[in-house]
Length: 186
Image (cartoon, rainbow, N blue to C red; front, side, top):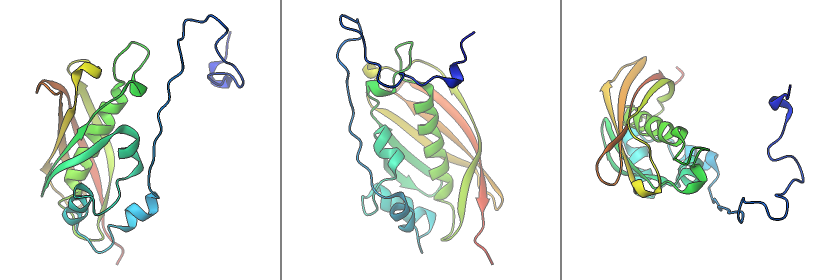
């Protein structure tokens, strides 16, 4: 029996044999900014002020946004909208965008929506997320729009939902998330 946990993919030094049907390799260059600097941009800002600064480009985007090509386009208290243009680097083996991208997008807008309700110095982290995928996403789906809404703000736990639509406005995923509120020390 093969123990796949001990294998690397592809194995070190392995390239497709001559005549392989893999085609030419493709690549993607990702540029990001120091995540500590991004997080430090929140110092002294309410959650709404911080997420607004991200949307307006006054604070560098977090690395995950650069990696997955997503960005905030609308920010209000309790509501955040992101856009995302998936590329083929996020395809899974069955030829569609991996559900993990949609989950990350939904988690991001739900969490950022919660963040917009928090005072300066107050943080949050996701406790859980439940995602329902309603249709496959491909390059032909075009730009995705994800909307996160706070359904129940709280001092200890906040609840939020997310909806992701494709360029034609068709629902591709929904999510619900619970976020733990982290009060500042003291």
